[in-house]
Image 1 (cartoon, one colour):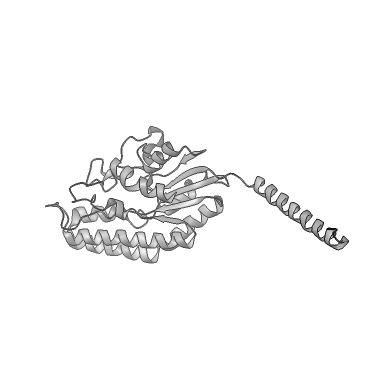
Image 2 (tube, rainbow, N blue to C red):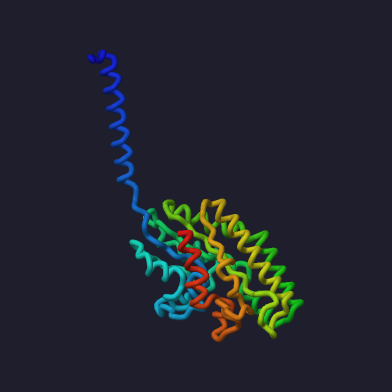
Length: 268
């Protein structure tokens, strides 16, 4: 069947347009960076304090080869791995000192942050040394900070990450509850103090999850994987008071590999 001149011209136009659009799309795709590198940010829960096997070059940051970032890197072999998480880090420390490796080729970012801003170390020291009344008061103070001040601090960190690594999948990990209430501990903190500390952990996880979601990030909740492995459970994946004291109330190597790694791997 013979096509009219109009039909031929119309067909040619659409074919030419389709080819042009396809070519433009392919060219645009070819120009996009391949985002495959992994950068691990955050505080001591990400650096691996408590897990041992520290990289001596990391100094006081105490980055462990048994931390969940190092374990994930070893298992998956990303195109690059930058490990800047550091013991004691607060939100401001991440912004000022940890974001250097982030760029358009960063495909994955992990972070735990906020516990030190809320006074994690001071709260636990108060609870361990000063009794129930002082503990409950200090936990209440920390929870007020978590509710009123921490959200803005997290927004600053998450905004900076998104700006420097626009192509990255960002996984924000939470903190475990510390105690099994009514568990095997016969001495130490009262159950009322332990319950208050757990409630503060729930608070920080709730705030962190909300801020992460509002930035388009994934939140990885470790509460479930640590259930049955809290302090006083008889099978703890967390240190109690230790020497050196900076490892107190931090995940053991089992806590990193069994508590943090599978949750991060699922979200990554």
